[in-house]
Image (cartoon, rainbow, N blue to C red; front, top):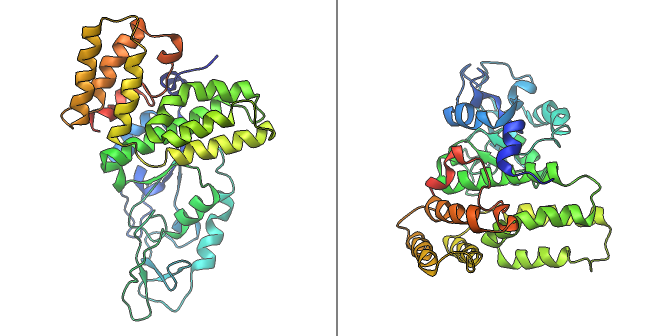
Length: 325
């Protein structure tokens, strides 16, 4: 039995890692926290958080002197900001090593912005003359996390204020979770096809070439072992979803979906729906508007195949995500 994303999240929360300071733990260098209301109160309804602070794990204490990155932006070292004579890199890396080995059960990770440990991007790396390099880095912990789990959805708390980045992060977390719940470690081709048939239109909204590629991969003509196909499929899927879908691609998918109403809904109704898709294309309404309209008609007149499309409800609707994109 396949399940929709909406049901699976109410039965069990999704395991997501998070920088401890974002849930209000007093682990920042100044002994304070950076609690994120959105992460804690809103996403906390759906996420089962696992908190971690790599600086505390490295034994730097709380409160503690601030740290910074310096040297080669591709391989920066960590020092205290005030005392740069001590290279803290090894101590820092060792503090997180065991923890990093045990994260394969997670479906996402939210990290603290601007942190030399946890920032995801744009972290300053200082030269010997005291000025930052033009090239920026990720914080050392997050860099190691993303290298070890390249398909894991990772986002910074600050970037979650951007509607499109927030939508894309949540889409990836719920998809990552759904794949791992629906497709066993040693699947049959049928397991993969059943998952893919629910995700076809979501993939199409992100990339038509990948949509065609995944179709070929599951055509039954690929000679590679099924476990290998599972890995290839998952890698292509998560990579394809790693950037927000473009408005033009959404319109293309919405028009495809209207096609499923051709024989069951009056032509004037279909024209009304297409008018709303056109309003979305022009940026006059948000994505939730055409989706809600389509969802209503597909629920009453669509086939089971089309009603099960994760594109229609990729995350729980109470989050209201598509009202903002």
